Length: 263
Ligand code: CIR
Image (cartoon, rainbow, N blue to C red):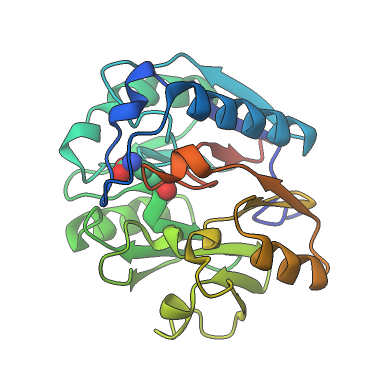
């Protein structure tokens, strides 16, 4: 049986380092507190476990303030893993720490030879992997990633992240096989073709980085109007606090690498 792309039984997460307060951000809205990030992270891990996912918790990396956002240096599927090339210089060497962890868990681990690509720019949908060009993911990296994906038997498409938006998935997430949660600005670009689109509420753009895990959808607790819309659409929403990680431009997909392990 082919599992839906949001069916997960395994995840890797990394504890936040104390240095997370110095994480990268586009606009300074003040540093997050370490305690606040740690609490949001702990609740997220519990929510993953409650949703039926076996979680591997990696130790904090003090030298890498953003290393809690383990989604960005790698991409994982049932068929194998890909070590990416993060586009922010301060994050480039996070790959050195994630690669051996992936080698223990996946028979096939591929890597990119050139360019840059962040996991936050990659949306896996049932029929294709969408790769958003952004300030972190360039065409060379996207094309190298397309070759790696082809080796894993995955079709892919290079698309564009709206200007000024950190990652493609800052503005969207997959809700089910044929439905996407998106900001209006990204949906207006037409990238989603035949997908049904649910738009986040105006003023709640950061709610677009939600995360479907098995039967539930994690959504930022600070976005009540988007939560209400999704509940009315019949989704089983788990609101999770993202106030502190939001100060360093993060949401709910970025704190884990998720896959369905057949072993
Ligand atoms: C960064 O700028 O890299 C981090 N402060 C936030 C990364 C968020 N990652 C993600 O959404 N995949």
